[in-house]
Length: 328
Ligand code: KG4
Ligand code: ZN
Image (cartoon, rainbow, N blue to C red):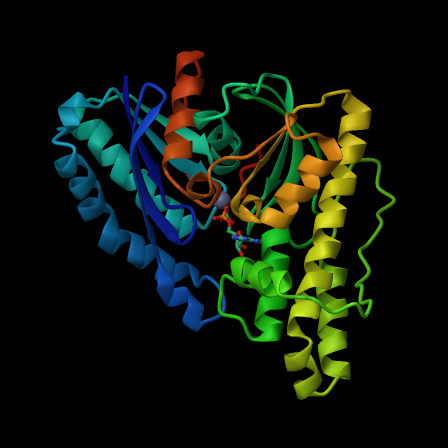
């Protein structure tokens, strides 16, 4: 079965080809222009997708010498995401669907992130817990099968990746700042203690909050001279990153206790973070924690192809309909 994956929900235009469970192509074009603005500008993102998507698809098919007639299923992200950006991918996918009479299925982006871990990791079995940590979302799901998810808790304000990006902006790093903060934190050798508070929520579920942490870093930066911040940048990054990781790890521990499920998948852009990977592995056991390869953590179309394929094989049919806030 040859599956075409299309992803345009935010600032990555991506086209993938999945042959059965093998990713034969996964081209991702990241729109660097947004770093000028310190965040994604929706209208610029939509226009950049329009300029890129058809040639990207053509290149992928040409490189593999595959014609559209060889595609068995079109999968496309239809929710959640930026309205205009989603529309570009959906319109492109529907055009191919109508022109070549190829079956099509809409895919939830978060479902794609969860499916990304199953492109590899055959040892991972249902049910498992999925910690989704990206620039737009932070949540823990119980995953009973493809297409069967229950949200156990989520952020009530900023997503973890968003906190990395906003704190990065405060500290002068370009957008997106997650990787740069991790690299800076790794340089910290100071013994002088520094910690930032993380909100403890009294909600019933297993929710997160990162906006107070971001404000704490903001006040710290404002309360100290510029030279002090520059000299202590790695210490600040380390303290901020530790606070985020502790919060994620603590909530996963509560989810494990509540559900008695011991296998954990950590997915989304923030799952690239090696300190987070180490924390989850040391707390829950090396063999119980699974991650996608870094190229499948950040936004990509291979994960959309995988989720769409599995849903389609389970009899799920969904004509793509743009839904910017579509929950899983
Ligand atoms: O999944 P993704 O590509 O896009 C969304 O669906 O949001 O995630 C992007 C997010 C950005 O916020 C970026 O700063 C963060 O992932 N990120 C990281 C790292 N690499 C990417 N955060 C922390 N540490 C990293 N190494
Ligand atoms: Zn994403």
